[in-house]
Image (cartoon, rainbow, N blue to C red; front, side):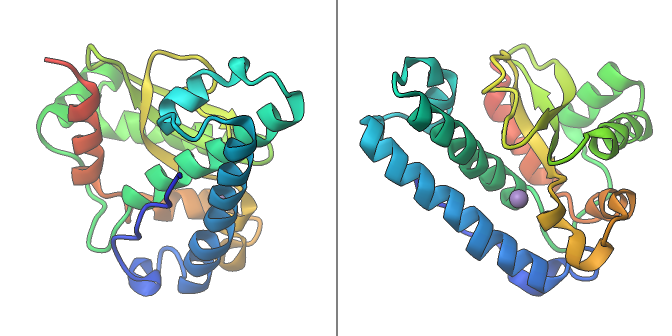
Length: 206
Ligand code: MN
């Protein structure tokens, strides 16, 4: 049984950057539906015993092509939104501190340079998808983007996302309409860097 992460704040807590109706629809409809569809398909495929990361890494072992595709899309949607909702919050934004800040400076030169690269990937993702900040076990950071509900794990990377921005239109259209860059800019005001740093420390070994 795959369980949707509990939202650690209220729907209206990310105002004015992300509006309450978008948050409610996104969490209670979109994410809930990905979760339900994943559970239904995982039951049929007999893979409910797997952790979600393990499941996304082993999609190739699901023999039925239709079920494999449903689990890729909805398992990705389940995982991606758990990360997205748990790395935002009210009274957040700013910049990370500690070892994550050091890793960002080492990999990208500065936080501002990272922000520019990440923003360009988020804006440049054609159609629906995501932009990611990921880390590997050595603590090296990566930025990338993925179409649909894919992510670096599904794509077979050894790095794991620690922050993701959803650039599907359902994530911003009610407030920002077609102006994705304004949503991406606003997103940085609600990033919970403490939560991202915790993700980083869990992935980085030693
Ligand atoms: Mn979404």
